[in-house]
Image 1 (cartoon, rainbow, N blue to C red):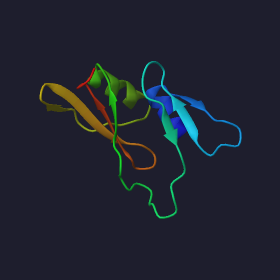
Image 2: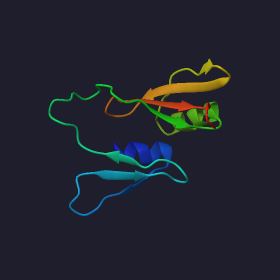
Image 3: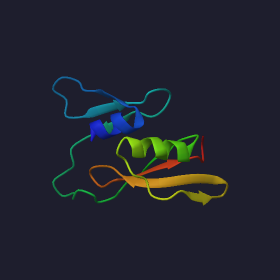
Image 4: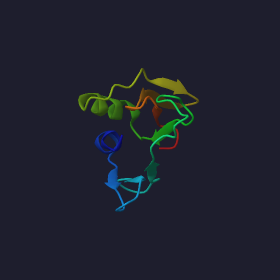
Length: 101
């Protein structure tokens, strides 16, 4: 999972010695993601959260992601902005959106 977010979204991995949580730090201003192994009752791909990344040029980002092996679905337009959806390796929903960019 960490490799997916570093490769496609530019995050840097930080792990404290002896810690079970993996920090993913953004390449600039933004939110740090924390990855933790799922609890025993959870099933892989069961969606509870959808990560949405604010991207200024959504179509260009999707083209760049495709070249690196991540296929986004079609571009959608809603209320004057564009977004596209994909899944990470664990089946979690990931979206890129021009809404806040």
